[in-house]
Amino acid sequence: AKFSPNSKYFVISYGNSIQIWKTPNIEQEFSPLVLYRTFGGFNDEITCLDWSTDSNSLIAGSKDLHCRIYYNAIKKRIISTLLSGHRDIVIGCYFGELANNAYSVGRDGIVICWEYSLDDNTNNSDELPKVKSFKSYKKHKNDTNENKSIKSWKLIDKKYLWEKNKEITSTSFNKQNSLLLIGYSEGVFGLYELPS
Image (cartoon, rainbow, N blue to C red; front, side, top):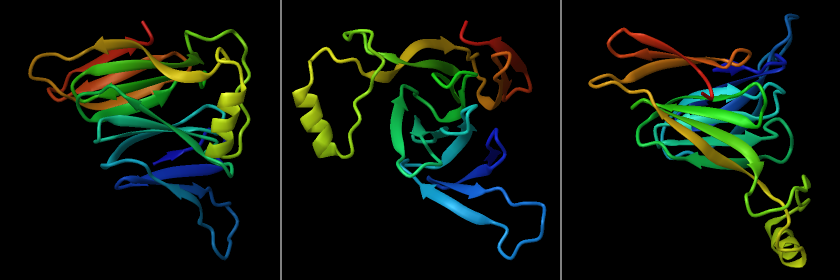
């Protein structure tokens, strides 16, 4: 469970689904807890959650070895992206201070740095296609120039922080300082600066 940075919502996970709730007021209300949205997309239990600093997007990690980013999580239309690259359960996943960076930590000690940027084979235009459905996207894709720029999440770095016979049991990330704190099964902890 985690509160959004703007404190208007909180998110919880149960099984392979996520629920966003409106944060109740301090005043007494008839129904103080209001479920805002429920969504899923995972094949196994969700292990970690984080909000972007603007409270618009969520990142969630799971035992199915994937992370999923939900854009516009509090708007009508949600878009999600699947990030894969782990070989063990995802223990922690975090947005950077800027929402175009993300980090995921596997139980086996692999830390993956992700970046939301332009594809390598495109020009520098920052405009994304505005489409309403999959059919209109296919039509738009066929009608536009082939080297139209598209942004996507890319794996930019993979760090191996594991030590023999040790598993990562807990993580925490300080967005302002880009510091990742990792707790190992032997009672040892490590403090790492990301993305270096």
